[in-house]
Amino acid sequence: MKIKVGFVGCGGIARWHVSHLEKMDDVAIVAACDVIPERAEALAKPFGARTYTCHNDMYENEDLDAVFICIPPDQHTDTETAAVARGFHIFVQKPMALCMEKAHEVADAIEKAGVVSAVGFQDRYLDISDSLIEFLKDKKVGLFTGAWVGGVPGVPWWPIKAQSGGQVVEQTIHLYDMARMYFGEVETVYCASGKGIVQGVENYDVEDYSSVTMTFANGIVGTITTGDYLTEAAPRNGLEIYTPEVRIEYELRSAVRYYSRTRSWEERRVRDQGYDCDRAFIDAVKAKDPTAVRSPYKDALRSLAVTLAANKSMETGQAVKVEY
Image 1 (tube, rainbow, N blue to C red):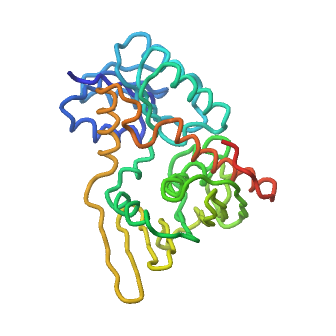
Image 2 (image 1 turned 90 degrees about the vertical axis):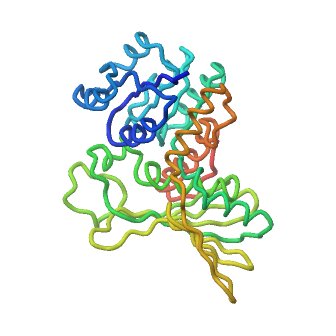
């Protein structure tokens, strides 16, 4: 049996998912929807899929098993709730909303419908992350630091905070999600930020840089820095974790390095975590098992909550309790 898949949003991230799904013999891409017809047609053509400019038209006219929703963060209207109401399983690109009210509305609809949901936190499927989680099981962690510092992505909506949520919400959320996976739930955040370095980017109103200090329910303290002002400088993306025995460096989607006073070792990524994330979702759809994915919508919204709390702290200058 082939799982019939439709896409809402046919830009770069959708094409990335297509590059995985087209390798799966049990998947058929049958429909594509985008407000720009040419983008829908470009995605659909290799598969002979039908195209739409309205997601509700696609939902009404297609017998779908699953929908990949790959739209800008501010464009989530009834895209999810209308899909799950028809019994379609959904994969939603992060960030899945820009406010917790919308995220909870979708989470409630998913639970009521009993469908499989997944959010695009593909790094939960990293092989090097699996071994790191195992390594940390009997270790005490006091501190960790993280960084997602690079340049401004080349999509028109990204530099507009009302559309993207800003860099913490749209990009660095991957590190916040990993921190939750490694260390548990965040209780409070405090964020300081600044502007003035980035020039010449049309409609730019996001922060150039920020630093967030978090306290976790288990007492761990972590700091994650974010920046988009690098031009010629090499980017820095990853985490550094401190245990009494070993200092650990996680280089984003590449390697984990372990350092003690007497030795060091490295584990490099072997598997494609993006493919594995999509494969897990398809397998969960086939099994109709909402528990078979590592980042279901109801859990992923907790990572969103941490980043939205960071934004609130940015605005108020005060420490903020995370409201899940």
